[in-house]
Image (cartoon, rainbow, N blue to C red; front, side, top):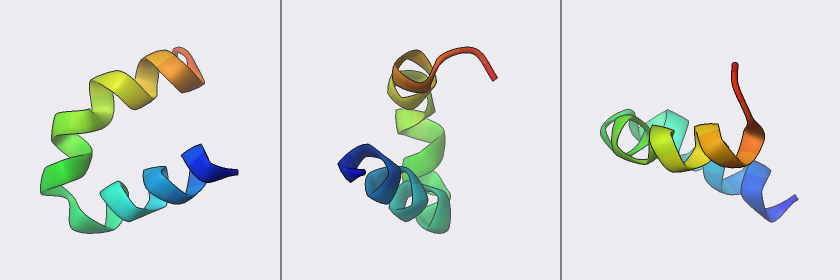
Length: 31
């Protein structure tokens, strides 16, 4: 669940989410 925690954290920040969205998207898969 570590990935999930990071995902939520980035989502809250917003700016970080946009930058790491590529990495998360590849790990989680196509939305």
